[in-house]
Image (cartoon, rainbow, N blue to C red; front, side, top):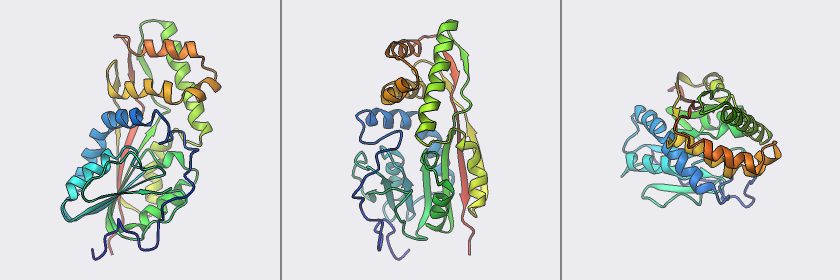
Length: 279
């Protein structure tokens, strides 16, 4: 490619008004552990799927909603020394500097992207937060080179059954918490079932070779996905209280999530590949 797509020609410009109404705000004091647990729980799937695209030296990549930047950092190492990675987020302050990696303040819902410049775009747990997901998907497809890859990793949180609890009161508390968290997410504009809709949405956006892979983890004490769930009792505390939980409920739940007997299924993570048709 003649031009480095991490240096946009006429945009996107750094944002002057950073959006703060996403459920998980990067400026929140709990953002750092949120990023850590997300990476521990979900980077293994995300990175394995990215590797399947063949991403390597010379590729130009975009990581949308980069969060803590772990995926962008991995990509930067893969595409070095001649490639580049643009990591965007409404608040990219958690991204650590790295050769070949550019972090940019950018809201994919409203800010323009450079056109047809990226060999690979990855968006993990971003589109579920956006009301106009179809328009954003179209924008991402336009930003791909012909034959370029889009990977979208998204949850379907309508499926995360409890399998085993030490007693019925713990089981009831766990299910109440999931219902309250669902209410918080829906109030924040999240589509809890978006993961299962991604393949069809990507096809409607004009991509080909759609390849969805569902993935479920076992939640047990010490597992990263369960630690992420426990973390939500802190990060989403205000919303959970507004949804009917009490401080006593949240404290009891944190204790319950460490019970050796506890077993549950994670929600389903769909990792979906699609490619822009070649000319």
